[in-house]
Amino acid sequence: MKICKLKNGKELVIRKAVREDASKIIDFTKTVFGETTYLTRTPEEFLITVEEEEKFIEETNKKNNCIFLVAEVDNEIVGTLTFSASSSHRTRHIGEFGMSVKKAYWGLGIGSNLLAYLIDWARETGVIRKINLKMREDNVRARALYEKFGFKTEGIITRYFYIEGKFYNVIEMGLEVN
Image (cartoon, rainbow, N blue to C red):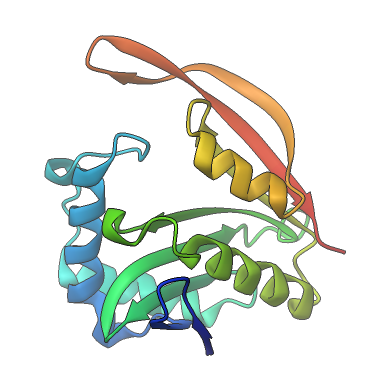
């Protein structure tokens, strides 16, 4: 667990997700899917049950190369980050993360704190050697955040998203942590 101050003076708590968070995580996820088109789904497409979310959290917590983080302000989940890596011996050292923050909390440092926690955790595992991500090419704020932490662009996937009659490219970025 990590506790830090946000730019607005509020206290942020970052911790590993636990089974009891499942319902709150589902509500959070549906909210953020409705706040931006930068994410992969709409709220209507997010059909995970509480039981499925509980199982996902438990399975993630059993692995030494995966992590599911929640960020809380005043006991409200305002951000999440999931990092998943393969169980295959040859690729268990590399994984990909996804992160989201409630729009009302953008610009306060939550994304930076989640990302710093992930990078520190990855270095401490002794297993993770590289962190990858995919992001929409036009998400300028996210790109600036990732570049600030040393992520490098490794490729572009064209026409990845199709939203309201328009295609959007995705940038693949990576950070070596060993």
